[in-house]
Length: 459
Image (cartoon, rainbow, N blue to C red):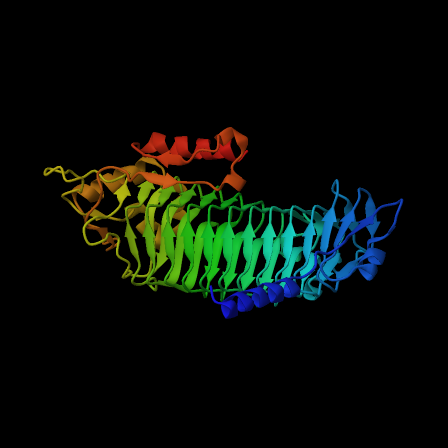
């Protein structure tokens, strides 16, 4: 090696060593000292230091105005003053880990939160938030990691007066993973919040599990949203990817598994949409693809406005829904099959003479009784009555009512196997840490098995 090359290499190594930041020092907060309060430790700390807080209760709101690691030992309690946010970051690169955070203010318009992020590149992890208005609020805050927190909203007040468990406004490239959110207004609310990754969270007992507004290019995977008004509400957003999620038991007035309103280029694959009032609601949804999803035991599998256009459903399983489809308007331009195959419908009673796995007779996707109900809403009282079933059978034999024009031209004779994997962070021990392979060789009994199995694993 030439002397000049060796000299340059040595200089580069020396420069790298000089540029490397020195490791920060540790400061300890405890009743015995050296710092009796967290505020004093923050005032004495330098950027990069770690403040270790021992067990106990520490009163007062905190501001992290320099990049620090704030770490709880034995889950100490950070109790706010009841006004404003309990902890606010104004410096980039802070970490808050291992605390119980409680008692924020009550002002929605002032974003009173357990943790309020007004900076970038922070980590909020392994905390328990309770008695807070908002849980974690990201205010123009980018590149943060919100991980493995338990957030419980104020269930003592009306749901409309609560904040979201995790609220993201005007923020980019954030990652939310492994969080549990209960009894907030919305589990996760994203407005003007693009390029986010939301994975392995569990959300229940609130309004919308996930609520997107004007948020594009996001990934939503391996989450569980159950027992809410709506599992997810996606509005005015583009290029959202849904994979391997569970939207379960979302029931009530105007309840949905997933609601899409004025969205475009959505991809939904390998999701469970089970036991909801409406499985999938579509209004002005355009150019989207649904494949390998299980839509089972819902009152209505799909409710679609005629404004839903250019969408494609293929290789999905529609099992034992009271009604497969309700079209609001005359028809949609949604495609109920791909170029060569369609979907499995448990109510399809066609035949397959050439044994290619595809029914030889197209499946007309409609419920005649529900078509009549659109004109006479009081008929819903008789939806499952023998008269309604007799009417449906008579209509098949001698069609006299012009119902839905929607049709699956290549209905599948057998259900599609769905390799649905639940995130490790979300999987209770009773589930054994295994993937759920759903061959779905069933009709009515299969839907009940799936519902009961989901409830057992989620408890």
